[in-house]
Image (cartoon, helix red, strand yellow):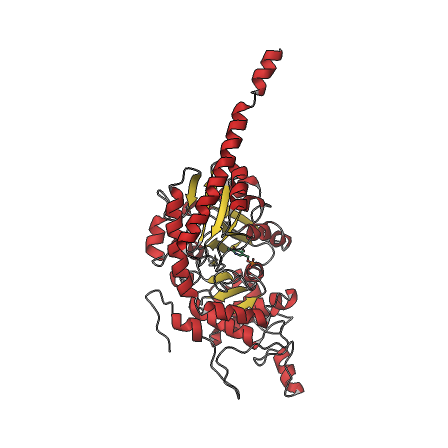
Amino acid sequence: MSTSDSSGYSSTAQTHAGYEPEGPHRSIAVPIHATTAYAAESHQQLKDLFARRRDGYAYSRSGNPTTCVLERRVAALEGGIGAIAVASGQAAVAVGILGLVAPGDHLVAASRLYGGTVEFFDDSLADAGVTWSAADPWDLAAVEAAFTDRTRVLFVESIANPGAQLADIPALADIAHRHDAVLVVDNTVASPALLRPGALGADVVIHSATKYLGGHGAALAGVVVDTGRFDPRRCPALFPRLTSPNSRFGVTFSDEYARGASGYLAYARAKYLTDFGATLPAHSASLLLAGIETLDLRMERISTTTAQLAAALREHPLVARVHHPSSPGRPDAGIARRDFPRGTSGVFAIDLVGGEAAAEAFLDALELVTLAVNIGDSRSLAVHPGSTTHCHLTPSQRAACGVSEGTVRLSIGLEDPSDLRADLEQALVTAAAVAERAESASAAEPDVRELARARA
Ligand SMILES: Cc1ncc(COP(=O)(O)O)c(C=O)c1O
């Protein structure tokens, strides 16, 4: 039994979904099944498991009871029909996308994405024979124009990392579905406590659970959720890997839908999770389950603090721009009002006057906020995306993500908002001095063209 709010989100599910105390001890916390394999009751049982004639556990690379509770819990929070937990968010993107495409297929993706996702699309996905085109997700005509007859997936982040630009999920779902494509939404930054993409039309939801789901910076993890909207049987010729008999496994994966399960996830688990071995350890699943119990409380607190800090930073003379949905003139203000009544999470970016030198001085001067390459921690973190998370992107890809030389990404945590504000302000004072010195040095530098003219 669980009560949900108007978005369908249930805080009861955070602590209960997917687990019933059982066994002789009826342990309240989900037990950690630290095991590689499971003793079979008979040879026949193992044969049936491998032949996919029955469900159960044989070997932890493709399934573990602790991890399975995490899968059921995240599926419940996202309102999905199932989920696969994997070793990291990057693995979730890879397994989630590869489960939908075949060589020769095409993917359309938002031009504003986490750098690691762009690198995967540009490099390893291209090696698998799948091409992609980037389009500004706020320009719906451009998104639609990027589709080809081989486009199987539209991929966006619900809140983009690092600029916190919000995606119009219902409009993007319409476009994807008009083209019989699957809308995959990376919901890492929002988390289901702020936004449930499935309720707005998304077919698949991806998480780097390393971030807000876990929430304490203690474990890497990823999750792929099937929201139950995608049914490849509606257009079997477009998804032959799901709808045709699979000679390796001896089944047609889309048959799973007839029993209310996800054929897509069954395929992704059997093939990609098993082949790549991107398995989430049971200990990590346990840390994630503990983090999820407080997800909605953390997200509300973090979103409120972040909006306050974004407003304060907008007033600072050294801050040229604050990338947050509350900034004046942001085209996503309407999406924030319509789809994000509880706030827009804790990731945002600021552009500092004085470029990378000012950003470096600012980061080195921070005392409470930690200089670290992660987001979604209970501790506040900061980083220079241009030289870290987005450093392998081309300059135009970086510009499309809103990342410039002076951009600093902040991920706000659970500290006292006034302590955070004081730390950011004292670091800005240091950065201002550096920016001023750099400006007066460049003003004092003789103009080379003047010198050349004088010599001539
Ligand atoms: C939006 C987003 N998706 C995916 C990932 C990859 O997740 P992980 O670092 O857990 O592999 C990240 C990492 O920062 C991210 O920010």
